[in-house]
Length: 467
Image (cartoon, rainbow, N blue to C red; front, side, top):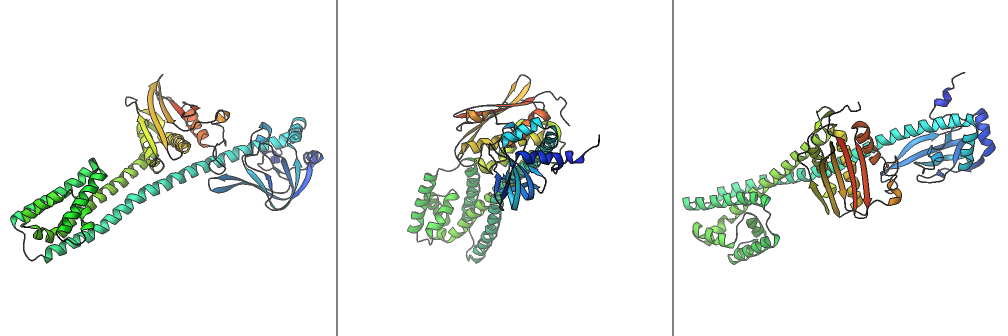
């Protein structure tokens, strides 16, 4: 028997007896440029053979329309889901004026069952296409997820980087202003005055540290600023409204200014050095901003290295809690507003042998789905436990729940409850493959209004994982 390479092609050309059998049961139609043959999500769509012209098959992934295939003369357009009753996973459109052979779904199914020659060519090509599209979209899903993470990280890094840059610029100006004030002073400070001003400087630095540990109540801060403004205005200080908040940030109040005035030899002498005090307080605050901003950048870089397991072997002993925390840092831009994250960790849980970066992809998909389910407000609970020689990680949200009608399809490839273009429907399928195939574990869920719970079970024993 001769080997026909056409039967192994992704896009075989239908000709001879096979094409003739299709022509006998089909209807010839003509379409204009852009006309739709079938739409992504259609439950009932037709089988088409291109007689003249072209058909472009695309899928919406996020904001981008991904081209999956171009069919020209003699090739056919149709998916394996036509036989299983599943919805179309892509959209087909005519490219230019196109002449097609259109075959009804029921007629196509009957033809496949009754004509071995047609079934051999069409079904084998459909199966290979399904596998090829699956691989393309999985890669697209990974790239889209990477793009979202990159955008979030860029936002997270930009804020502290911009803050550090602003503070560094202001530091230069503040230091220059302080130097000018000191050089322009005609009378040197007495020992008592130097001691008093040194105490103000230490107080400002200590106050900056206290603000980080125990935030000041906004109402108390406002009252302090009002009292300082009144004291400064009573002593004819220019721009009292601008100086008062700065002094308040340095831990000074009206009583402290009165005491300081006595140590300086009078209120008038204190007023003369207020610009210096303002500069010292500003300097302490700016240094605090630089330290916080650069510390935040350092934390993010560390989280990225932990999340991606950079410079580490693919498979190793991993701490599941560290993976969850690094994932939360990566997704911080999505959880900051209105979403509460509750941690219920079993800290006695041992490290497990795993592909750490792949497990982090699982946590990303589950937590990201929970965030999307909650919208702008809600609670996500992350829980870990040791059950039946397995490490169990639970991701729970108090959102509206998954409708019962679609629960059985949650891990089905290409199935998504999101709007068209909002997702490929591969996130949970990828998570399932990582957990089951790569780690010999299990992933399951239960959902009702007010609670959706995903459980990931991972064996505690090292075991031999898929290479």
